[in-house]
Length: 104
Image 1 (tube, helix red, strand yellow):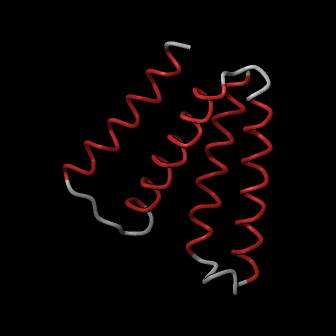
Image 2 (image 1 turned 45 degrees about the horizontal axis):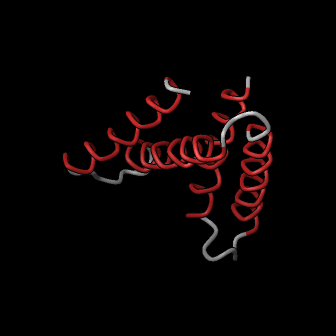
């Protein structure tokens, strides 16, 4: 169950990272609210997952989900571009996340 909680913590990290792009330095109200809410939810869920998961593993997976998710949103929804080398690097992060989960 804690892995599911950690997964949602990672999704909340993606939420706040994407919303942060639209805050314009926290001068826009609604994106700023979404950003702060996403941060709070992400940290709360991470803290819950840390009740039973090892810190290093949980933190690595949490940041990895946030990283990969944010990259995917950027490419698929915001029209950002990636080189093949960058895609391979993101793939390495995915392999790392899967590996940490499989070995824990």
